[in-house]
Length: 162
Image 1 (cartoon, rainbow, N blue to C red):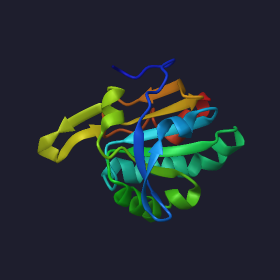
Image 2 (image 1 turned 30 degrees about the vertical axis):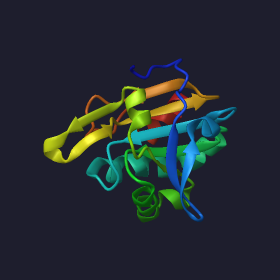
Image 3 (image 1 turned 135 degrees about the vertical axis):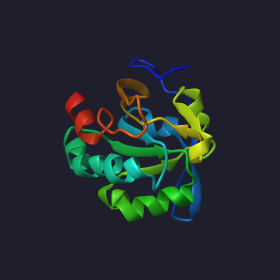
């Protein structure tokens, strides 16, 4: 399945760091009756993800809030410990961006947004994209052709689209 505008997101169990350690998070509970921006990327601490993608959503977080977006979520195929540390080191967590892991890549694979480049150490990773989801339905989807580029999937582009 490839992710498309109009699709209902499948239920998925993701992981995030909670007050007492890793906690399972239901994607349905994050999106039901809510307006959410989810941006996904190949990996924490990787080049474009750290220098372009996350900063674009830090810059635009207040503007998303002003447009009535309930949550901005960064999703990566990483464990919750890595996502938590990365959120702190980039300032994303302080900006109010939720750092959530798809540790097993189950959601990423279910929506057809996975890729692998074993020679670069990237196996079952997420393609770079951003989506605006209203009550679990994809209203806007910006996917990059090349995972090393962050043009369509950046915060400013998504902000302009909603």
